[in-house]
Length: 303
Image 1 (cartoon, rainbow, N blue to C red):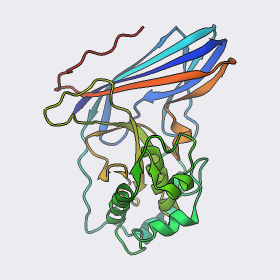
Image 2: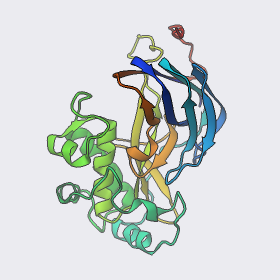
Image 3: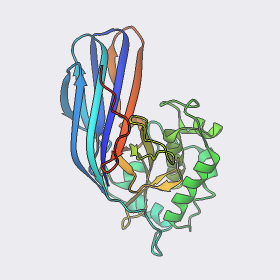
Image 4: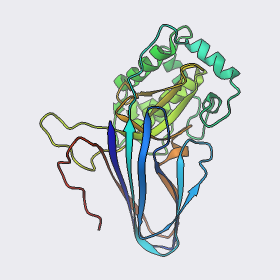
C-alpha cells in the first residue's frame, strides 16, 4: 500500500518569540516492510533547516532555527511511503520468554537497533515492580515470545481506558498504570516497562496508523493523529516485531514507522526551546491517505 502523509503543526505565541530552536523528527526512517518514496518539509516563516545526528534513537532529525521575532510558526511535513508488511504469525520454532531474555543478556550488539539498548530503564520508563507483577501473568518464562507479546497487548487494550484528558506527554508509566487510563503513549510505555522488567528488549515506536471512516461515512482530512506502539525483540533469528497495545493488534500494513527510541522523550515529533515571555498554543493536523482513496474533503489552506 502506498500512503501519502501530511502532518501540519501550528504554533501561536501570545507575544513575539525572539528565537526558536526545534528538533524535527518527521521524516520516516528506513525500517523493515516500508520504503520512503519522498519527503518534504516546509516552514513558515522561513527558518534555517540543517540535518542533525539522532543521538540514541533511530530517527531522522532536522534542526530548525527561527532567528527573527515571530508570533506564529507553521511546520508541514509531507511524505509518500510504501508499506508491504504482513501480519506476524507465531511459528513452532519461536523462542520462549526465557530464551529471548538469555540471548538479550548475551548480545554484544550495541548499535541503535541492537537489543542491548532496550533492556533497561530509560528517561521516561522506569522499571516498576507493580507493572512487572501485573505483566507476569502473560510473560511466563516458558511461553512463546510471540504469544506472550500479543496476549499482553490485548490485556492492556481490555483493561485500560483510552482517555485523552487523563494524561499528558510527561506522564510516567506508573501513573498511567495506577489509574488504568491514558493514550497510546501511555499504553506503549506501560507495556515496555513490563517487558523490560522480565528481561525482554522493548522499544518505543512513533508513527502513523491508517484509520478507516465509519461505514458509509467520509474520511475527514486532518483527523488522523500520530500514534505509538511497541517493538519487541523476539530473538536473534526473528528480530523485532511490532505490537500495538492501544488496538490489540500486530504492527502490519496499516502502521507507518517514523522513529524508534527507548521512550517518547527520545523521539518526540517536535521538541525544542523558544525565548519569550508569553504562552504558546499548538495545534496538529495529520492526514494519512492511501493512494487509491479519493479525498472527500479539501485540505485546509494555510493562513
